[in-house]
Image 1 (cartoon, rainbow, N blue to C red):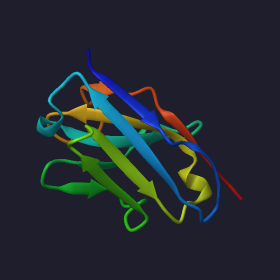
Image 2: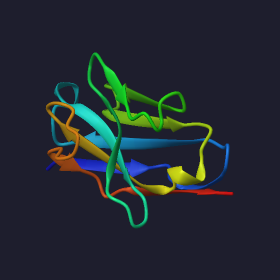
Image 3: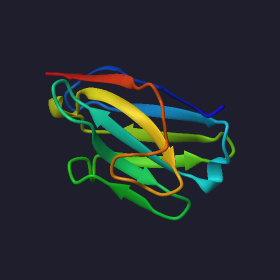
Length: 118
């Protein structure tokens, strides 16, 4: 059974940092692209970034502030979020697919809430 379990969300002040984790199981981690998406209240889900074995992609809105990484030994990906802004408030979802997709990844986690307070 495929599982993606996010953790690390919480409340942080503007300008602060958080690191999200996503632990994966049930598939061959190294063969999959892993991504983060987010959905803010009242808005559609949007891509944050995606990481493969050789490349990393970021949405323009987070470029320079967020960093994706992956640890094959732990089958885990991370999202380091720095210089957080109120507009970063959202539920953050981890997703997996054979390639980076803009929307319909094959597998999804349940999400973790990030709230940036001013």
